[in-house]
Image (cartoon, rainbow, N blue to C red; front, side, top):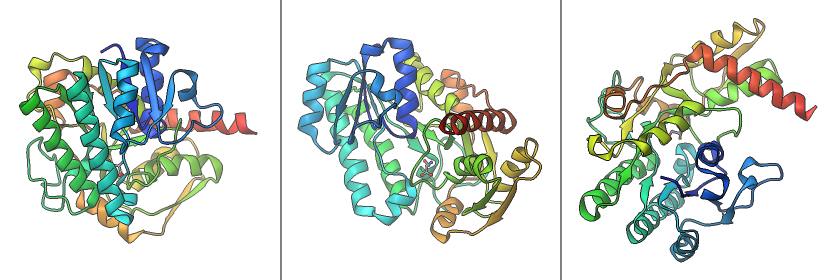
Length: 319
Ligand code: SER
């Protein structure tokens, strides 16, 4: 992996993935694409960038033919809460974009990464220590997209030999780029509101456990999986990943270690609460650890410190 084509480069993961890949593989070896122009000052704009709507297969293939990458990281997607509001748009974008990307990877012989999610599990999946291989009958459009995506990636590997690799990301927490339209977003918003307002109103109820991970660990995991010996990958599409299983009161307590006056109250959103309740409480990551050395560094305490420091620094720069 040395020349990388990235879709959805301005999203929550894409933004930091582009920066890290450019740091490792060289600025000019990473082509960032997204449906809109980067904002002024975006780190994504500090290297090659092209506008791309992933449902436009012709433009995608043209950009690949010109850039000549050996790897594709397909990050463009709608998240769970937005997908529930606009299910048909989600199907067209999440599945249409993925099949276009896989076709491009097949034709141009690209190693391929796309993320799956804890959203690929559903209400009848075992909730605690959810195994790598288990029941996947999600009841959300996002979940349907993610399970279909895992199967499609497996199909392109077994049928056409495309080197597809994927992970089931938990909620990802970062201060560089805020997420939009996800169910796990509360665990990002809570830190921003802690710094800005000293209080937070949570749309996810107390006691609702979900898996989470700090963005640095997520980006490291992508790079590690893509660099791993393909012969050792048994589960390919897609590995369970998580660094912590947490609920809002735990995040509140971790923030209160830094700001004892921080408070949380609740105004539960039935749609996102329903989605959260259909997902596991905690997933088993032993296959990722065993097959390619997944080893996250951040627990809730370490992540909270980094989040508060990072957000305070950003707020100070704005002031
Ligand atoms: N963070 C995503 C969401 O909440 C889960 O993959 O939609």
